[in-house]
Length: 253
Image (cartoon, rainbow, N blue to C red; front, side, top):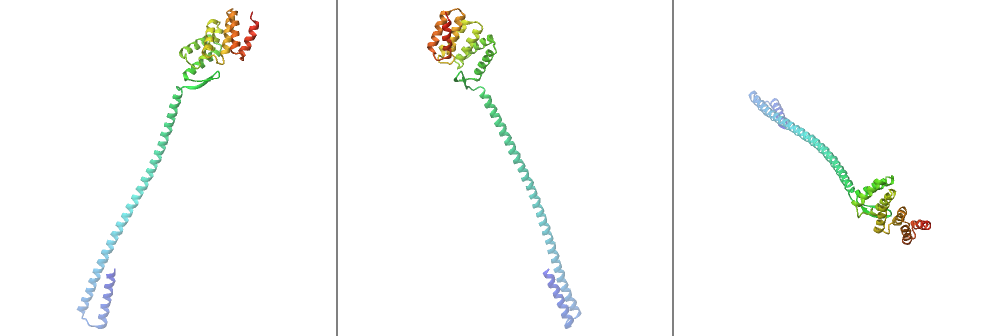
């Protein structure tokens, strides 16, 4: 553009100088004009070339900007997809953790069913297996329903299966009561005495001794019954069973 302006200025100066001075012939004037035109054409060509190159550069720049914009858009989509994947992974992880917790809790619950636990029966605390507790409770439930024969069988089986159980004393007591109800007095005496021998400090021991005396009375063995009642009063003087024994002694002849 600069060269073009210079050429135009030169052409104007040449024409003005020729017209006012009259120093050149027509051939020389035409020659000067031709030279100026050549320079002008050359300047125009350079300008055209520069404009073409500028247009090409602008087009390349626009393509580069468009490519960059496309790349940015792709990156935004990829980042959005990655965020979505991260959120899904977080949800999946949370679900896995929840299931793992539920599974662990379920395993703990199942194991707990087989683990021994502390129980308290007749004022005594001891450790019992779940199956042991369940079997004793089932036998006692049968006894409370007044089904004495099935109760006798249930407690007998229980004592054979768990001879060292913490339930031994109460099992012997209820077995003796079932046998008493069935008028199986001799076996009842054996089991009541077994309770007292195994755990003389048990809260049901005085009742067991009193039950032995009751069985002896039913068997018409009054002498043995009196001795049993006297032994009860001596061994457990503060018990309720001892008070009952004193009354029975006053009535036995």
